Length: 279
Length: 263
Ligand SMILES: Nc1ncnc2c1ncn2[C@@H]1O[C@H](COP(=O)(O)OP(=O)(O)OP(=O)(O)O)[C@@H](O)[C@H]1O
Ligand SMILES: [Mg+2]
Image 1 (tube, rainbow over the protein chains, first blue to last red):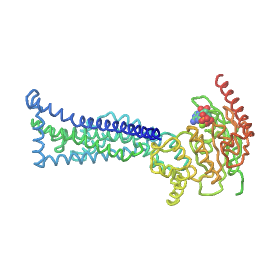
Image 2: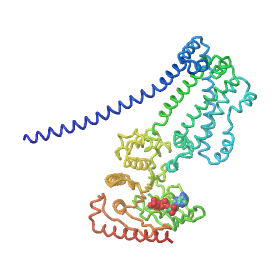
Image 3: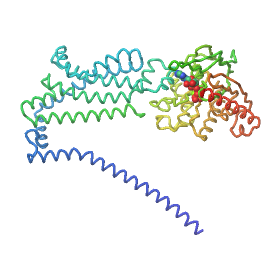
Image 4: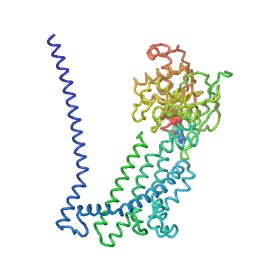
């Protein structure tokens, strides 16, 4: 009787120990995650601190590298005057419109290219030949055709977004395992169903990577385009202040670009996990 | 029902060209299968079993000869296939996979719902209806494949080694589930397998195929009463003879194909 009880006690003890070990493991993982989070946040802060110190002590030239505190001060000043807001708004509208104007035809053509080899063979050489030309090199031509107005900037962005998206979409479709096409065919999918239920969702992961790339290129393009042929926008802010040697103001433009780039890729990352819940 | 014959295959031949080399995958295949029959096909690897099934499934064209699947009802698909590899579509949930055929045929929504529910239940996947395949085990994925084929309510079912990748335990369970669904629905089934035990357990008739070029060499009737159980199949002395006969056939075929490939 006593022995039994003792044995039972021991079993409970063992179980408790196992639970303790797992709990400890969980705590360790949580701690590790917290350390990683701290590292992620602290690295930019650390860099800004060094920058601040180097600039304040004039080890690096504060005329070209004004201390971050100064840049923030300038940002607040420009922000309250309201003028900065307008430039940001103009740039964002251009990016959004250009992005959509590039992405929608790119996805459509990419899906068609992926599904029909005749279309693929017809368009591939054209795309391969046009892709290496930087859109910015075409900017003078675009300005001549579409004028100095808004539309020329939107077209520039659209053209540069188009290529990575069309290529990735087509690749996404052609990389879908043949067995899924067989399954769809065997279960009687018509072309529309095949397009919507197999080709589009199957191509989604690779396609989203193309869109991520397109988003990065759109930002690079808009800044450069606004530097050359515009009198508004974040790129214009950077360029004008540089020419006027208002370096802190120029840095405000750079920081805005960096901020929006980060924001967009976070948004797209979120969209990706919404659109591809099965990965 | 006018005709008892459900599937008829006449002088079916299939030749593949692989960079100028000719592969005779199937040669002069002839058979007919009655309505409600369960037929297994056994043969060495590469003898053209999958090719035969793909031709019946309309995914491949025969080089010569013809085949017919007799329809007893209109508005129903002729055949549905359970694929050898993983044919469960990763971007559709369990539920969406099972209802695939019904959705592709655009049958009424409530009908889809009802049939999907029934078959999810029959294969025990109701709690997993909204999961994606990545979250399923191998056995569960095969259940999805089978439920999808049955839910589509075709005239015949084509199954290409559906249990090959499963462990013994899961295989037994799924074989039993398959048999019980089959006994309810009395569908005509062609089932490919490499397992002699499985063939004896499931079929009314077993076709034995030769190595390349694939032909149907022999046919074995299995007249065990149903419902059957593996233990009963294993202990039946008559079935031991059948097992041995099939075993010997496969041995010679495998050896022959080895000699051929060495030449
Ligand atoms: N699309 C194809 N193109 C060229 N050759 C093919 C094609 N499909 C199959 N074959 C050839 O036809 C023969 C039969 O192949 P099949 O897949 O039907 O064999 P199987 O009996 O199903 O083999 P396993 O038991 O290994 O699944 C093989 O020699 C194979 O290489
Ligand atoms: Mg096969």
